[in-house]
Amino acid sequence: MSINANQNVPLKIYLVVKELLRELGRPALTLLALAALTALAVNSLRPDGGLPWGYRPGAPDASARVTEITEADELERLMELPGAILLDARDPVLFQLGHIPKAQSLPADELASRLGPFLERAKARPGQSQGDLAPVITYCSESLCPLAGRLASALAEAGLKNVFVYVPGFDDWLDLGRPVEK
Image (cartoon, rainbow, N blue to C red; front, top):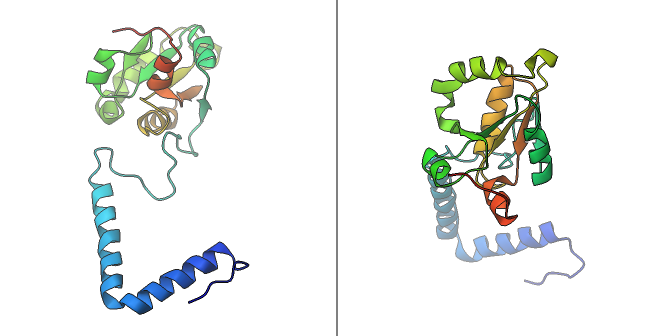
């Protein structure tokens, strides 16, 4: 088999795969199918439910009214606003080991049981008389962690306005040498 250097990459890949399948036959195709099924099964067993197709980890649901922030200085500026709430979406054990100052623990997997009481407190906080301007900010461990985005989306869909996700997360906060509470 010869592949011309001027052929495009997808065509080269197609030709290589076609040649391999012709050479190796049915066993190769069976092995490839088994590998794909195994990967899907392992993904579905992940503690966070696996990654759905087209999901970008850390990003909130596009349908929700959520704004991503990427700078620690911006997070600090938002936290200075009256009534601001910072929510740590990580596991409570990680929260106890250290968290961003003023953060409250609200793990994404506990949201269903804690949403009602949280919303009552959130809507009664200072700054809400100005049209729901007080921010609610969520964060997770790092940018690939989907929990902060899921939590922010759920809060926005429940009616909270001015919801943010600090995308870089706690690891970035630490790397920047910012203060930590325990």
